[in-house]
Image: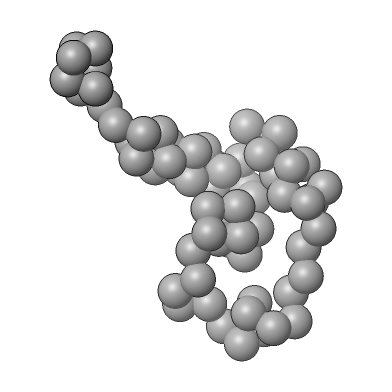
Length: 63
């Protein structure tokens, strides 16, 4: 990134995406699934929440 004179990283884009999803009102469980977070998930989110790919894509399309 330095060679391209870009002071941002791909991780910055990840933070922006998560922020935009939250601002768009996307449910936190869906955001966690999209970005691959597993920490602080309740048993319900870990075991009983089954989101299909279409739901995840629809969430991304909200931003």
